[in-house]
Length: 263
Image (cartoon, rainbow, N blue to C red):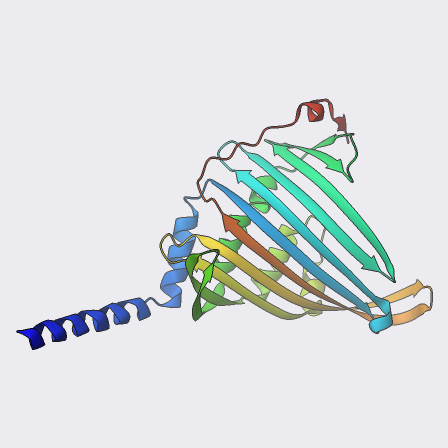
């Protein structure tokens, strides 16, 4: 009887391991896409690290931008606080901005000023700026490879490495940028793309995303000692962490912003 119990326990443990291992990357991908449709509120932290090299190291420019924010898709409200430091040709600049989005209007205060400005947004703003949708869009047109599981902020996660369809990734870059882009030029300049996503094991919600891109741009410039035709290499890494999925979010426009100047 004792041997039977031991064998049964061992068999149960083995089957449990096999079940865990049998979750394929494509199943994780599909479950993540489906579960993300149910996310209506969330908070996020984002870091963007960018480096431009103009021909050689003496022409290096770097930027680090840190942002925190909250999004309420039901009531169409967003808050985002951004701090950016730029080091360009030996000089350092810093910028701060605070933005509230209420329905179709953005209210913005920059560099600690007391003056608020407001502007009407494009009709597709909420499509272009929903970070969760951006992650599921990346998944939808990418082949996925499962890496070793990891924990993010105490949450057990599947880790997926994405290999996106290049044409669709270029379209994605166009759609998520507020700056007009030339699709064929972007595709030509894009030299490397590395994408990883962390998906919660229990909910299949996106927990973290990393996107690394390397682009090479030929350009004619005249800046100080830098003159003529040079090759500009841009390396950008964007890391986003998501938390408080579907938890209550209160985003209230400050009183002083209600009299914002129209841009």
